Image (cartoon, rainbow, N blue to C red):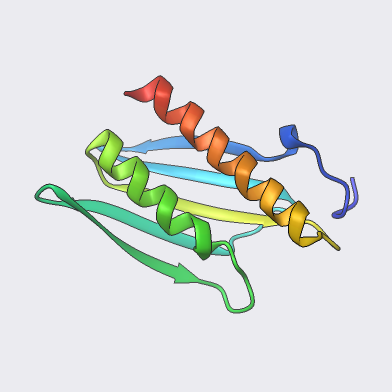
Length: 112
């Protein structure tokens, strides 16, 4: 597969338990590490810290996903994300973001 061909099933969400904590890896296309966001509960309030690789944009959605997952599961969650497809239009980017959010929502429905 070249990096400009994509299909919703190419975007993969996988989980790894790390003690009580959770690592979610979300990748697609040319897989890589573009950002890592860790969300944790501070009392009843979820907080997040993010590291992003320069010139990558995954942090724009990894933070929201980590916050949503930590709040829903009441545990520390790190989201590592790396999705790349060449020549995506703005509409294509929005479609990828929607697919990622749908996969996260489906995952959380199974867990809560």
